[in-house]
Image (cartoon, rainbow, N blue to C red; front, side, top):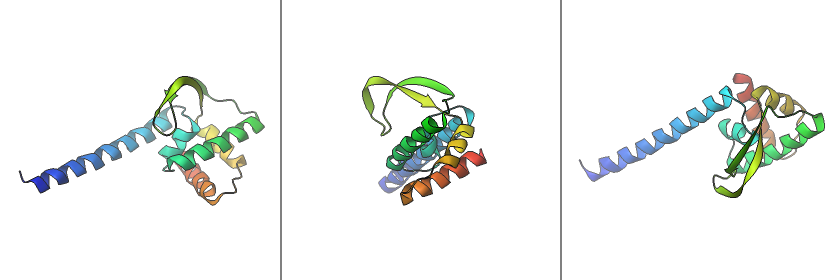
Length: 125
C-alpha cells in the first residue's frame, strides 16, 4: 500500500474518532445530568468560552437558588488535564440549564453567542 494512501487513511480514521467522540458526548449529555462546561462543549462551544460561561451559569444558579441534579467527585479539569486533588462537581439536567440560560445575561459577544448555541442545543434534546 503506498505511503500517501496510508497517511490519508490515518487522517480519515482520526477524523472518524473525533466525530464518534463528539456524538457520544452529545448522547451522554442528553441521557444524564452533566456539568455546565460539558454541556457547553457538547453544544459546540470552545473550551475557554465553555469555562467562562459555566462560571456565569453557576452565579445565576446561586442567585436563583437552583440546586444541582447530582454531585460527583472528579480529578479532571475543564482543559482536559488531570488535577492533583479530587474536586466536587455539580451536574445539571438540560431542563435546568435551559432555565438558567433564560436568566443569564452575558455582555461579552462570545458568551452571548455561546449562550444562544447552548440554548438551542438544550431545546433540541
